[in-house]
Image (cartoon, rainbow, N blue to C red):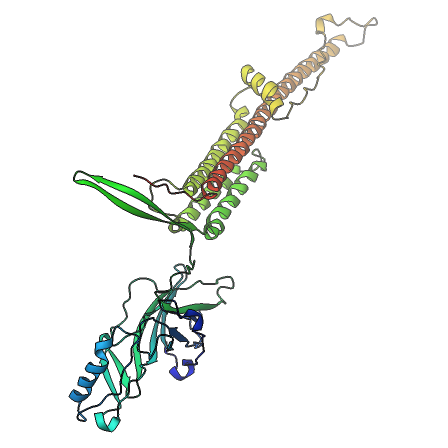
Length: 483
């Protein structure tokens, strides 16, 4: 995407007092930021050019050029004598005179913005202007008003981009323009691969503000922290390298960085904790009326897909296994254990269809002891009264003979057989109901016991992992001198 040069180019000058910095034997730079506002698809043509001030203890003075003839050879001979031989000296008249370097930025194209890498690819033209004090020549005498010379033959300010990342693949331009008034025009393309902190809170309706900071590499007192890593400390230690041929002294520098964890907490840890919480509350589903196993299998499948999607955010190299991988492994193992527990409870709930009653040892262990542990005492058995009928032979005949004794006796025998069959059927029904209730009670007690163990294991595991995270990030490792 091309942006209009006239709409972007804006140049102004500022002044900087230099009397306070006269005794400093280095470059003094007023670093300025060039803010470039861009959104996801296009950038706004808003740039600013700034003025840089350089101050050296050494300085040089260039005289007015005198050309013997209006030819290129005469002009370059004069430049070689008066200017090119002083390329290592800052072109000013005296020590206290600052050198003003004007910057002009033209954005040609925004190639792309990588959101996750916080990187922007831009193609810009960087134009620098400064004046060589005392240099001038007559246009008629030397034959030209402007001439192109090699950059290596002139003193050039060391202005670089602070946010630049990676290898500089910008096209090389070995020439600069030199005017007869002493002004130097250094115009070169710059393929900027820069680090840009992206604000994605309003994505996809976001508007970004990237910064281009130009300054001198001699000013390294200020360290800026940006991106995923935070600078913590820089330590140094002296050591001795012992070899067969002798011992050598070494100096080691340790750059200590701390990762900013908010991205991984939001995208990895919080969703994982949500899924574990859902699996925990699934124990509230009654196993005898709801297919709890299907729900848990769906939950495990969803968690596995979540880990596969977020696998790119996890580190792939390192000397040890990250604690976050242990966290995910424990979470998945707990979900699988919860599914196995559901299978066991479902099997116990439907055990009565195959077994007549609960074994004596299991009934004592679960209904008497484990029920007290899980605060679920068994229900008291209901007392049933069985009425036994006397046999027909024990029934005393009536005192007064009836009119039809044989028919009455036959009717009584039939009623006795019916009542006996009903009593046997009712006894069998009550025995089956008691066995079913006992098996369901056993399953309910074991389910509550395993739920308690599940909660305890989750709590202990998560507290242990969080404690290890906090312990390892609460201090900065100290480097000791060795050797």
